[in-house]
Length: 161
Image (tube, rainbow, N blue to C red; front, side, top):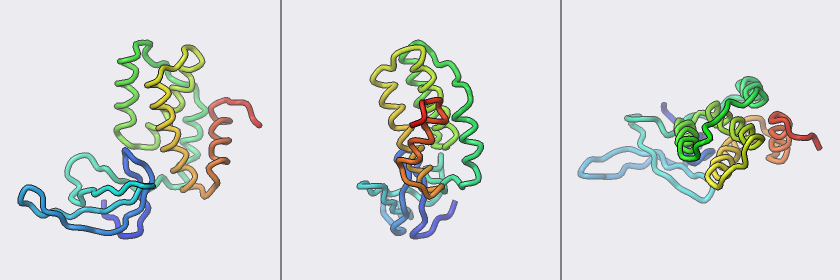
């Protein structure tokens, strides 16, 4: 996918960022072009060649959120009770970087919490998934983060405030 300087993008690991510039770097005797992406206080160089699994995607359009909201409010799918197996499942889902997968992780861990106490890995993955989701939600729907958090709680079956 071709992006331009100034485009907002979603990095599959770090979330919402902006392309600051294009840059060329020589690595192992080969010159490659990179997107220089600013994500909060982090700057990453992402190859522009598109080889391998793409690290960048455009933000999810506002029109897609209705489907994501339905996913978030649907019943959670049971997760493995084996913590290592569960961690592997969840991280694999997070790795694809799709907002739909991130929503599934949030929904399923929230459901899992009702049947079993979350361990430290579960809590870390849940917080990371929520942050990625809420930042993209805030950006795409042009709403304050607190509003996105409140709406997420309601979709997940939390008590309205």
